[in-house]
Image (cartoon, rainbow, N blue to C red; front, side):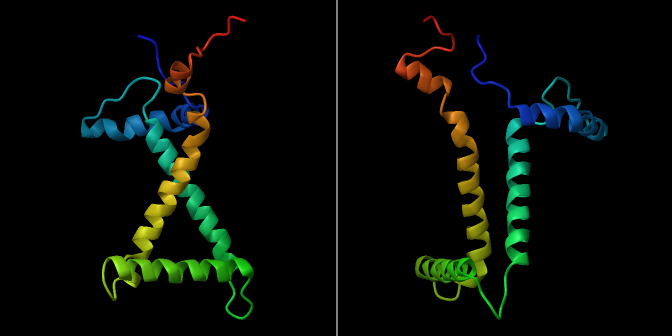
Length: 139
């Protein structure tokens, strides 16, 4: 059977660098991993998304100011107030501040994860089979 997806270069690079280390670290626990893909692609992409969100948050945090808020900071603050109001409306009064970090973090993670997968979906096997295209060009 043909392989339906192509390997991502970033996954291959991470497995080349960290794969042997992870395999050696898990061997004492009874996990004997072998092969070229020790770290699955979804784990690599999750780590990259979390790293991107962390860097983005650190950059935004360094530019926040109480005395002179920028337009972007005012937009973010209005978004937080809006999300807080929606959470309190959906879950109940007084719950917005409690669940806002969790819901916002999950929403941001899902949004970036969907955008990260968008380029790979443009030429997927399912799309090409549905439209009658194949991987090889015969023209």
